[in-house]
Length: 535
Image 1 (tube, rainbow, N blue to C red):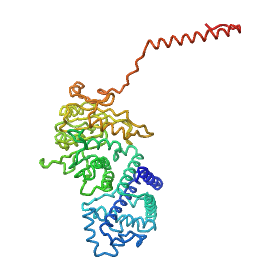
Image 2: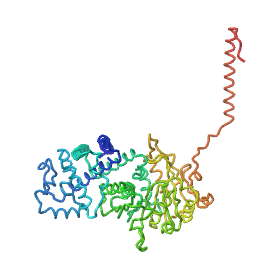
Image 3: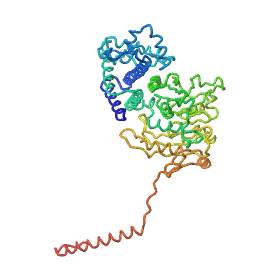
């Protein structure tokens, strides 16, 4: 499928969403649309694996024009279904009963079946509790099939769902949809819904361009990035994972077998569900990821609580785009928490450094952390200055990257990326000022592939370039009071062109001669007419 086809599929699905949501706002409709896309993916993947498993026993589609071949197989082979499902759990890690497959649901929608709504409710519960070895409880908790926004009565709600599902089925039928394609469509829709959600979008969406930069940096060898990517990571963490796009970008960069296990944490329940669906939809098996619903600042995830220090979790890469300048309520006990006690607490008005220290604590000795933060962390005083100073004195801050303003749906402020390591080799900090390298858009500015590649290349080879990047020794940073404001080290002011005074004088003299000649000529005409002459 070409890039143009992918874009066309995304536009088709977005047009359906825009046309059908009616009185429902974009955020509410998003959950329906993405859930149906998710069901379609699970079903396609499952039916494709079933066809391979059953081989010649798989019924021909012509034998079941208005039903799934798998439904037909179940009808004919009830006594073998348990063994078949056991095999499927081994092969694809989940099972879907034939009546809950997308093909069955789409057929019910096409024929306006009165039981569609009830069947969907049962199907969603089955997927949450019984499909996978690990339960995915609450996966569809944000989708209210009894919502009055779908209709006041059951019949109206059922009819509306029939219309939505039929339109999606028709829209998808025009395209060849492999798992990658549906995954791309899912990401595209998340981005489109984010664009319509304004400030709320920051809760669940990191623009793909920024995901590409962070993932491109952390996959490189931490001690010697110029040697290229690491072959494999055991564990990767995003402690404010949103819909999971950052983690998926790291996986895409390393290849599907490049990460042992993906770990993510998300506080917002809706976004947490999006992340779990997004993982499965991109072909990450349920045994290959763990997403926790909870608050990273409180560190309420049992696996990170360090009850047994010998079993402390370490991650080869940590990526994050936490909420900017988030207000939090640190207490005295928090000051003694193992994540903060060596640095101090971030101020109540801005938890930016609290998020950073949380992730940095769990970074492996030879790992790399990349985090998106507001520029204020580079220069604000008080508690933040103390934390920043200690991180710099410890040699933990490797690179500071300044990005253009207006890259996010949720805020227009310019942001930076901090790259941190626990054992970095160079005794300097690399500054990259990429703030002027972007393509201007109507609502958001965009980083083009060449802008992204330049940032990653400059980081990888620690290149210096006038008005773009500079390696600053620690002695200089110390003299600057451990202030990391990029403009202190890289000037973007363009040198004014040197003026040649002799050339300017010659040009002015020539102009004066032309003026005098023109005046004399004009006075000649005035004299002939008997009019007063010009001075």
